Amino acid sequence: MGLSRVRTLVGTNWLKEQLFSKTSKGGPLRVLDTTWKPKNDTNYYEEYYKKSHIPTSVYFNPDECVQSIKLIQRNLPELNCFNHYIQRLGIASDTHIIAYDQFTSRSALRTWWLFRVFGHSKISILDGGFKKWLDDGYEVSTEEPQVEKTDYLLQPNFQLMRDYDAMVKNVKSKVEQMVDARSWEEFSGQKELEKPDDLKTGHIPGARNIPFEDLFNEDGTFKSDKDLKILFDKAEIDLNKPLVASCLTGLTACGLAAAAHCLGKDVPVYFGSWKEWVQRADDNMVAVVKKKE
Image 1 (cartoon, rainbow, N blue to C red):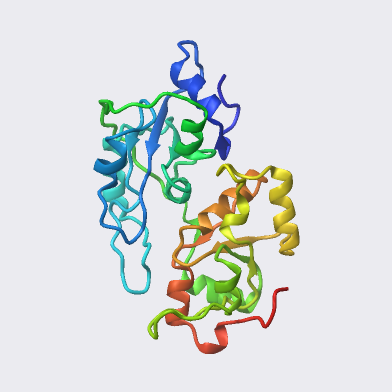
Image 2 (cartoon, rainbow, N blue to C red):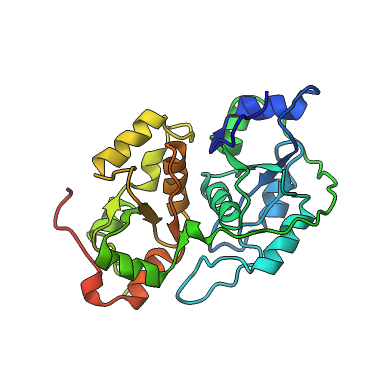
């Protein structure tokens, strides 16, 4: 079966049917193995993708075309470079992308957000990722498919991102609610610094906290829509009002954006997040709490 609309998440069984059914009418699919971790010199293409991946998938590096700077560790990719990159992966305007990774879904979520920011909204996340695929007993491959380069030109949708200046204005105007995906210890300011040069802990004034790990079941799949809504409610976030997500470097915030998207809401991500904020903001723009709210 095909999708009547592009869902945030697709299940492993749905993907298996699409890949192996000769009568599938879901349209052109491109499965992306996005396996990657920040601050690591491992060649994930060689060490993971080439050794085992979901059949027909191609490797996508979320850090491709990205130039990190001191203020923003996880910067946006340069548009022309990124455009050429996705063309080489055989992605066209009508391609339905399925993103997964072989770890904790962080890079798949970042990929989901990146494509949407750059104007390609026809993308879903494989719920539970490669681990769930393996747990379900589905076959894997070492074959690397041949893809035909496209001439697809991206049209960015920068309404799905926020920069530092926008966040400063929002602290004053309170137009958008803010939700932070870091752990409670980091968010509250109670986490002890490991080194003198570590970033301060705390949060942007007015922000609420939903830790990234709270979004998932034990098997790595997203919690149900009902349980996700409970998390937002407990954090006193009204999904009928504007909202922006942040974290440490703009990675796990994409999980909050995806969770909100499951509930029917588009949520932009502050891509510089806490790492940029704490380097630029005055001390009075860093909030802490004394005890768990």
